[in-house]
Image (tube, rainbow, N blue to C red):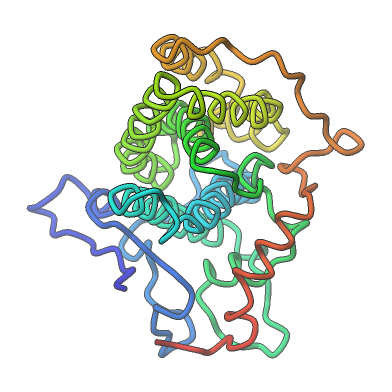
Length: 318
């Protein structure tokens, strides 16, 4: 699968950043040739200079957070491939996973370009693209994704609620991220809002269908919503890195997106005649959550599967 992002000619688009808006950027380990040890840079032709007055490590860590959210959620959704209720939904969920995988690649590449020191070196010195190194050669405690993304899959009703909550939250963030002072993040967000709007609308339609369907479909939907709801508030907690990124104009404070996200969610709940859950939020571990690298066993198991081929064959290509 071609994962390269082509940079358009000047007469085709306003700037080289427009190239980030026209390619799917689907990506997986082993698909990018690395004749010189560096591979095809997904940000080739794009100015990755850190904006003036912005801390490079803060920018890198913030991009890593957004990239890890997308990468882990993509893997979870990809587990529905060949397991969805019908072919149409099988394809839809697979495409949602691929959209998030594309976002992950761009964001991890941006993180590496901002601060190369965050990229892990392989024990044997094998050369791999930096986004591959970040995806496949970090341990769980180095991942900065929200815990919501790593939860083990349930039934199709759970998948519907999971995609709805995640995409509603992420879309509210990306809509604001388009104004980032970092032109790379702004371009990634501009591309991502189109994808996330589809993810949200697809899951919202299924949410209402299941809520107003049979007694069993409604029961399963309500059970899924109650199970996932305790991690919903955590999505809007502001980590120190997010606060610093927002303060320098390159990131978004998640707390500022809550009203917009919940406004949309309330419309979906109303359309399905579903009451807002009352389940209490899930606490962190000693006050630490996924943004701090505190994760549960599900992420360790996910990474063991996702990283196995890359770790066994770091120079493998196909």
